[in-house]
Image (cartoon, rainbow over all chains, first blue to last red; front, side, top):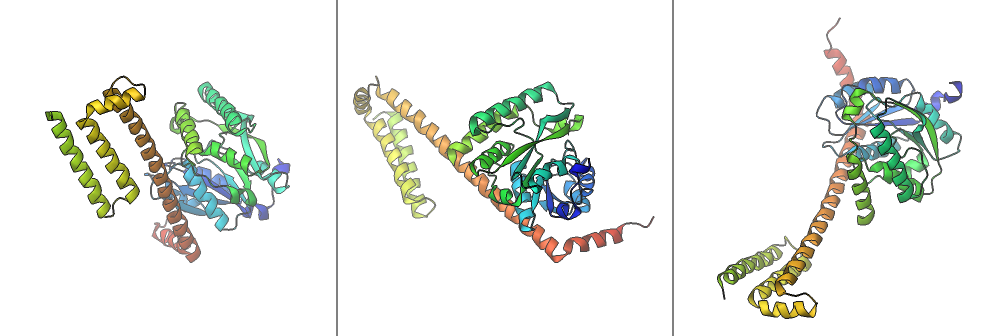
Length: 234
Length: 130
């Protein structure tokens, strides 16, 4: 565990972006755990209709609000831009549904801090995934294959929300796909910008709630459609 | 002229007039206005001289003039749908950029003016003493 501990000073220069949409049930716990890392927690409330904004405002370092729901990709880009405007040196993206483990944050940051890479992408297939249904597993594997064909990037997990960026990398990132297809777009950006990336094993814990609220496997078709459309319409 | 031709010509004349009015009122630029007027005129010509359409259809290797009109209609509709969808996507992107700008400006205003900590102080004042 000691090897993944980062100095308090470095963590204070780290901004953890948490896109949240109707996550009032678990956002408080997620932010409290993230605050233990001493990093700045930036919650982007993506037009929630529940109390997510008020709850986040009590706990997070910074809370931003989209007046209307624009999708996870849009919320992430908002959080990244705001973090850069506040002088972030490192930026981590973290899902609000409680699937990610806070202990993985320093592990993701370490290769960037050491200057080994610009981007660290979490991989549940290199780490562990607890309670992942086989349908989800198959969909994610197909996503990996799709990314390999479309972007030419070999990854083991292309759609993991836990990622870390150096300031240099974050400045080059401009997510234009508002929905869930942003994950594929992000890989494209990393590849085109020539950013050095690394995959880091992380743990994902699926809960009944996260599975209910999460993506349906059918949504994969929409993601592929959005992604392909964006490539033809640019 | 049969009844269908009369109704079609009246309808197309109204559409052409509306297109020109839209241009004069600056709701539509000249390029789209010329395109739409051309389309209405072509549709009118096809209604008025169906035999001529058959000749054009033969030239293109299509059996009947009516088939040519159907094919052109389907292609035009698909292109139209595509253009509208692309425009919708652009509009959505612009909405996102606006929403983002608003969110960032509001957050910068709140956190740089210290309004956030002021709110917290007031909220803690409101909380009942245990």
